[in-house]
Length: 524
Image 1 (tube, rainbow, N blue to C red):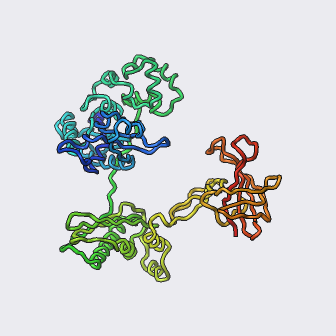
Image 2: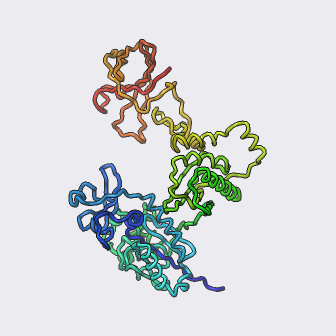
Image 3: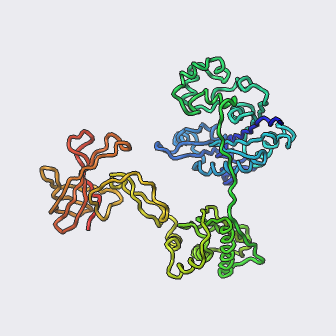
């Protein structure tokens, strides 16, 4: 039997993925001279944290000025007041990395993500197409350079070995299949094993700074030290076995999903709304046929219109339920085109559906009869959402929590209800709950603590009747230990208005000062 080719993995590390993506999406800052590029201006990408903005990435000029990842933005501005700030976008970086993964399949049959800034490509049996592995690395480096992306590349028998070389070896490294991984990678630091920070700190304290140092330690000794570490990133033995190919490392390939798309190139640019509506109706018919052939319906649609001057106008809509009804799609887009500026004319119109769902073929006779009787619920919701906004139409669903303001969640109107997490028995609740409990000032209360007069929103209310209490304890699994319990009362004032109030805490409970009163609901 013919012997299969040894496995070869190409690891690609985008050294400055977030900053390089920023350069591609946004022109250089004003004040940069010709040829200086964006690195001439100190730039940082920040993320919001509980302690204020913190730097996620910094370009070369910012690092020379003293700004480094992990530093607070206020400290960096104290060192460099003229530093430019942009918000980091991890979701956008991941989407960009997915696009790169599909693009990188030019060097191998499949690729996978190595978040947050790396790729893995299987190049087994493909190197000879480029003239060898060295030529393949040169071709990949040249291709990324054309896209203005800084990368480090490595080819090795396993994904772990390729990752180690790409991150801790030379910019272009190759580990041959017949070379012992423990010997060839022995001089690399233990950080090349992709371990957690606390594990790396422990290994350094034990004097194990290089991968080769682990070979001099008895495996049983390391197994005893890390016997409770089940995850690969917390156990150096698992990572070492993955690097040497003794343990499997599952990789999830990135597969391109074909997006339904139709377009019309117009013979002459159009400027009038009537002609544009006709073009949109034709596209709706075209994409309905494409979706029907795929047994799918569109949940999200994007209409792109290319003007003669090169500007692209985009209108998006999202539907409550999957649909491929051309008349419904045309009607929804008609409300989106009222403020359209066609300029000197539109020469290309494109309609695509980035989000689809399975939709079985329907019987047209029955469907037309149903539409004659009235508008479907999904179509009604779509029309309301187009007028009021995509997130203006929601419905509440019960949530298993005995805290009143947490007892329900909001979700899209036609989304399936969440799986039941158990039913809770509640006492009667008022018809209207305030978004947030509002504090009230209790002016007079009885010896047992029941208020007889209170002030709320500037009005004074005399309590004629009261019922309670209903005691609700904090949710200990999510609350802090200092959270106070609540005693709820149903009250009616001398004018017949009914309220739902609660007292937060009990005098002398050791969880704060005196109890506080809040109004949370109103009854008819």
